Amino acid sequence: MSIDLKTDGRFYELEEMVRANCQDCIGCCDCCTGMGDSIILDPYDVQVLKKELGKTMEQLLQQGLLSLGMDRGLVLPHIQMDPVSDRCPFLSGEGRCSIHAYRPGMCRLFPLGRNFEDGKLTYILLTEECKKRNRSKIKVSQWLGVTPAKTYHEFVFAWHEFRKKLTALLADMEEERIKEVLMFVLKAFYFDEELHAEDVFANLFWKIKDMEKRLGVCDNTD
Ligand code: SF4
Ligand code: SF4
Image 1 (tube, protein in one colour):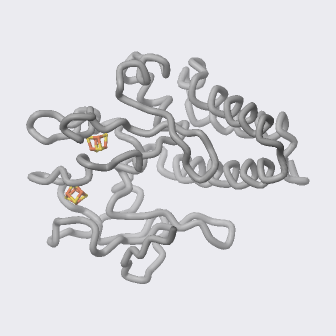
Image 2 (cartoon, rainbow, N blue to C red):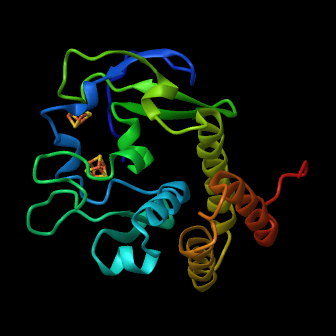
């Protein structure tokens, strides 16, 4: 399925200014309701969420905050909208994000999008998705609000590359083996309770390399 999203036609680098700043979404929570299973979480999102909330992955699932689903061939967690109100479970009664400081990458990004092309990650501005029309300019890195910004940017790219290698590997596998590998990857990146100890980025970079070796999808240069 192709989704026709309008952009301003530019590709922004991490330290470039972009007209994305919707002043902390004050008065609007459109992106936090009715999102279905579209707020997919990467391993950094989940490790930070577990650390800040003091919950395990099992607890996040059991308490209905997250669910597992398929995303482009992989089993990955996403935020579970409330089945009655269709609101994000982290949205407060006042319409504010109760986990703002450690909200997932997809929530940080909007109204930007990610563009993976020519071996690098750049950012695009979705011009018709955000309801606020008086957005001001801000550096992409500042908008994302994760420090160190360059390390976060590199992690997002590394995770994307890992997904690409994994998808190619799965394409040649039998169905039963695919299920095993998907569960192996899910457990390694999301259920591991050690990954958020100390330097979460260092742990995640190490985990990606380790999993590439275990799955036999290393680059020749590794
Ligand atoms: S985590 Fe926060 S920003 Fe993201 S959808 Fe939920 S309430 Fe909105
Ligand atoms: S539509 Fe824009 S202002 Fe409203 S919640 Fe989404 S990003 Fe924020």
